[in-house]
Length: 190
Image 1 (cartoon, rainbow, N blue to C red):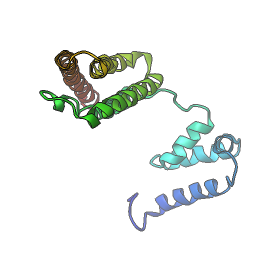
Image 2 (tube, one colour; image 1 turned 180 degrees about the vertical axis):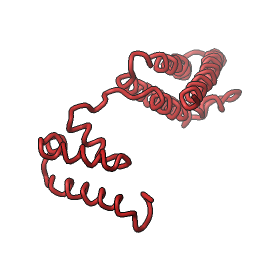
Image 3 (cartoon, helix red, strand yellow; image 1 turned 90 degrees about the vertical axis):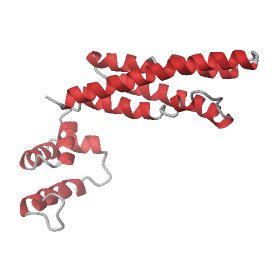
Image 4 (cartoon, rainbow, N blue to C red; image 1 turned 60 degrees about the vertical axis):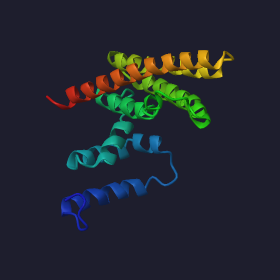
């Protein structure tokens, strides 16, 4: 019904009300507009009439000053899983030397992963920091791989250090993926 070309009257009425509220905003800042003492109750009424209207509900929460500052554990698990997907190419390089472009990619991947984990750590509740710390464990073997590649040791010494770091990473990566999958399953299933 919500996606129909001609939605039911209730749905189209809610959309019409929301568009009327939005059109009156003009060039005003969204935060101050939705906090306005006349606009906020209209958004609240619309959010109650049409609970499926996510925009009206979120703007009402924003206008009331009750916007959540932390993400729930399920969203954190999902974001960490997505961040780990960017690392999945590393275990597939086991048993061979990295090519030049892969060495460059390793440094970029490490920086991006570290940045994303720091962003998620700021959004995670204290009770969810265990997931953040489980993900941070992957940073050290990645640093070790990068350090081994930049080292000035003989080729075989570098490759031995690289191989050990990659094995550590692969073991911890598989463990983290399993942990996040188990966590997601636990959160989804009652």
